[in-house]
Image (cartoon, rainbow, N blue to C red):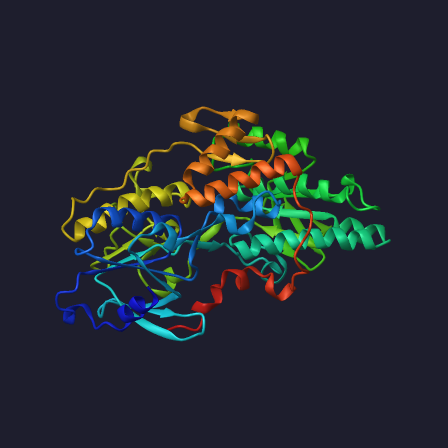
Length: 463
């Protein structure tokens, strides 16, 4: 497998490849990329196309359950779906695409050792996903924690438990209160799920320390929007807010983070002309306030819409022949919303993967192209334990029925049977034995930054 990939990298440009089948290069093995490749393997016979995926990691991360890694409900590796375990004839090359020559039809791949190689393509599919949105808030880059990768999830879990251990060891009440105060910025899916699940987990953990009490732990969820889960139906946000209130989580809406320090966060409320600022002592700020397209979108210098690569309804990039884009990195028009770009959600990415595969195959003479049309099936928000909110097909559910539906949905959409069994076993064991309250190591603060964990700096030095 490795030898064949290296041979592919050294293959001359497509014009001189003779009878070799056209090469489809997919950038990114996330929800969109993996779904597209699985569908392409079914649509295209082996002699009709050579399939190659370029990814910095050898797995798809099932990010929808990543808050459960922080709360010790699911083991980290059980959310990592090995690409080569679910792809039958797609070659994998580990690395990051950092630039492209569209005239020569090549992309430049940067390997982990810093070396670069050109890869030729006949069809190029861009699906590198997104990274955490980090606006120009003083101190955010240096002090906030993200939650986009497994490394970030494990680091957050270790960080939170280490703050409790430090609080146990100190006699200073103010310092202890700051160590036991945790702030989540962003009241969307991830932030709401994280706050709900971690509040329960940390209060359970605090009860195991001799001098700490569950009441010492304080969680705040901050969002500038007027309501929780503002992208969903208002009923879901209201029901989720009731669960958070029951768990003692302080929800501050209409509130923005304006500065983050090593031991505090400054929050602002009110309109632009009447701003009230309050400094809150804390050693933990988790930034879950949205995502932005992979920096690759800017590096390729293709036309963009709010940073997302512009495509037509067939996922084609009009600016370059033979190039497609989908998922979080692409501004795919949604015909159900008057042509506005589709949302940056896993649901869109998975469905776009299947639809785009048909259109890529059509460009190679198999099937006919079809425009993308999204039909919303609803959303699920797992709040931990027996609490969840969901609106399948417009029906609003909460409590145990929503929790059962949510868990079932995740088991269904996990792409590999082995991962489904492992996650289901984790849930079963935790329901019987409880969550493990241990951490692996005290994190190095230099490795906790969002930029370091998500490796966004690799594009800064490319031309």
